[in-house]
Length: 329
Image (tube, rainbow, N blue to C red; front, side, top):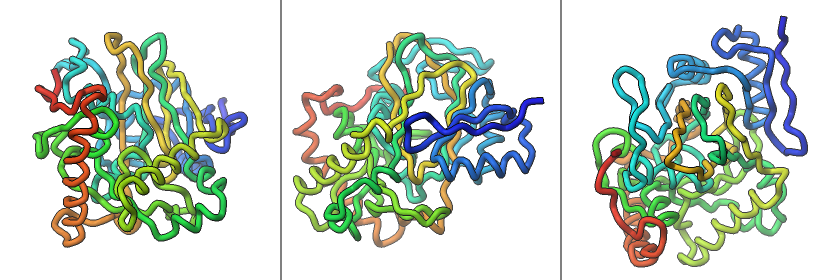
């Protein structure tokens, strides 16, 4: 009989591979071991699991309430019978969002409550490229010099995916669209500290990524330079970055509270189908504020001012400071 085995990644500050178990039928004792390993290592790789959408959601629920579960993450339209069909246009909002996610980020920091855990499972992957990469925000913080640590104590940044899409690729999605993108591109911005204390370990880590902008108290250029330098520092050492070459059946699970991730480009004309599940954070530790709270207005003001500047600054980026003509196809 196989036995649960957890092997840390070679030459990395984080991550481990888990074998000898079936995610679908984990006992409570096995799950407790897996959860402890996730907190310790930051991310876990489970080869040869071959989860379907229902399995993915069920496993995610063991970590907490879901933001969403078993969602197709594909560049193809999915029909009602489950078959995958036409590949989405690169100009569609769905593909613009996928391309935007090729820049380092943590999930849902642009929502009132940021995410706890995320999971991807591979079903169909291109022969080349299309990796998912992860980076260790804990080791990134630990390796900062004392002067920088002192400088950023008490500083925060706003987080918005309207900002990150504009800044990274010149995409300006309309606000308040129906469905998924109405939840993602909502015109709010949430203030979060640059140093996050992990709620389960009590250890500090950096909390930066593509969604972060406009540090209150700093001039725009100083803020942009600081945020870019912190992110660059995290990913500057290969021991803090892991790149996963997908095989069908693989599942990756990571702690959004201390781990960055990004997608990597591939030939978008080739099919790629992953299944995604995201676990919501605990409001006691992951809540910034709600849109109806008084603090939210400062985020809206900061975002509006930033987007106004980016409209002229991003005309030469991939999407030319434009808005998608369609949500999907």
